[in-house]
Image (cartoon, rainbow, N blue to C red; front, side, top):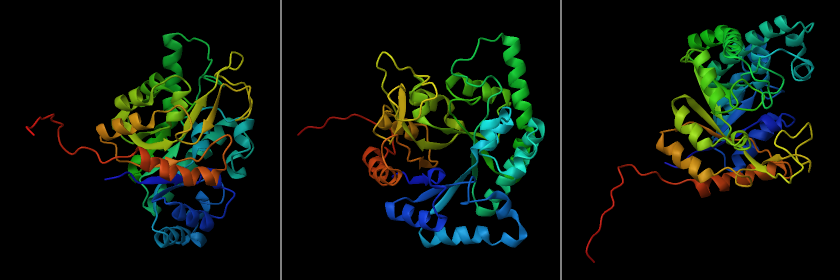
Length: 334
């Protein structure tokens, strides 16, 4: 059965939800992911008594346009829980979570909000919530200083302790929590993913959201990653990256914006970067992955609506009907 392709609302937080859902259906999508940042799905509003019908309104819109909601995403909360809240997070957090800015209190409120997100997911019939894992190691684990084994173990233990309350609550609600593999997070590549799962004791609630583009620019093969972590894989994002080193640029990219010539890599629409999507799709079928494949529609040069439309056709080009029996090579006489 061909894969159903979905669209994440993360880049359309400025667009009215009703309009965006209609466009997603017109572009040919079958599933969607809703961002909990912005007005598409405000967590506290969705839980309040006076807005109890908000979930039904969203479900009604989806039914009208024959779309299925497969996940909610709330990445900033995970960053706050897994790391220390700073000025960058303040700009993305609601005032009622940031409060007076005390890191411990902000983390506690973010924990409560992420658990509340699971309750909203439950009311919408959604099984997954995607977030970031945060990073207590350094401001950028792309160039962190070497640590002793004892130092690493202490940091991983502290990081894991921050997630116990969330994971137990999600388990009680029967909702899975998927950490998106991305730079700047505790789980950002192959070995850090392995270490994060170990630190969390392979908690049954923990899942992973693969972002192949972010692995590619680090030199990590998404195929190899998928073969190892298939049993934890809940979501795959259709997100690509082009590497363009010219002898002056570097992979760390400084703080230059996407598309800047001084960067060593930039985000691209799927199929316009370096990810081998056919190889990845083959291995995803091989390991039995049948979860959501969601488009982020990011490209440093292309309009987001154009990317969203084009990627539906791209997925159809790389998809295929998988073999439903063991391959046997045979010859027959003509």
